[in-house]
Image (tube, rainbow, N blue to C red; front, top):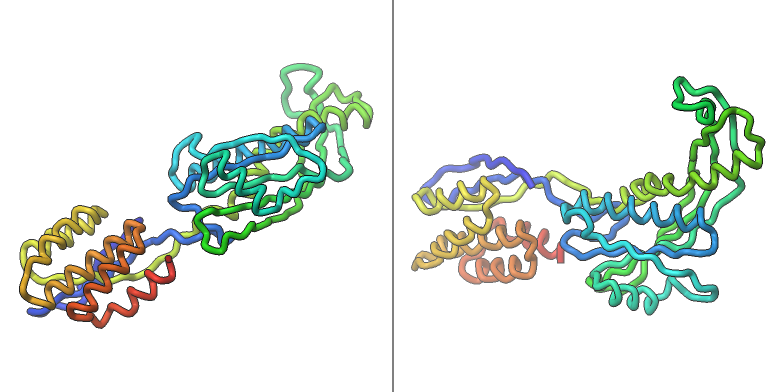
Length: 304
């Protein structure tokens, strides 16, 4: 989060700052993952290339989300499970059981991959090679389709969301230039697994946060403690600023008390506690409703 504060008005009454903030919003998929424990389960079958591709995809998916949400390496659990014919992996009960087993708030289930016919072009001579066996390279292409189910235990709708997609994996095959079609395809299938990582990164991009520029307001009076709170807020220390605003509640002036309550509401919102932000805004309205209250309330309610 980053912002710059601009002074909009100066008077003996409360002063309003326009706060320009980069706020995190749900991903393009509509799934909200910020602050939640995430796990991904991928299904294995008898096809080694398919299982290896799915495992690499799950790893790339987890790695991308860990970096985007800043949760650290290994924070997104990756699990494998044997595919069983006749099982309904899209059902709420199936996803809920996986969620309980992995201890996550949100679980993704990657169904077994479906691959089309492979094609191989080449070979062509490489620019440089370490040995004769890698002096030529062929390019393979195999289309695939995937299905990803998602269940969020913290989503009030309690529904399973399903995402599907198609693409093509393009492994490269190295040889001495004498491989026949069957041999080249066999090598390409063995080289398919690592391609899953890039596929996982691409799939995860739809679940990464969207950042949007927004403007908010905080209010203060032109005295020492109010200035101190503003400086802390400008340093992204919302908790420190809130401690001062709580101290400033000890006043008989309803306008000052209302402003402090409003600022505490903004701080709670910035810290992601939207329920508490609403409670403090309710108190501010009850004490002495500010003109900017309704706009803040709409933003809080949109997050709840």
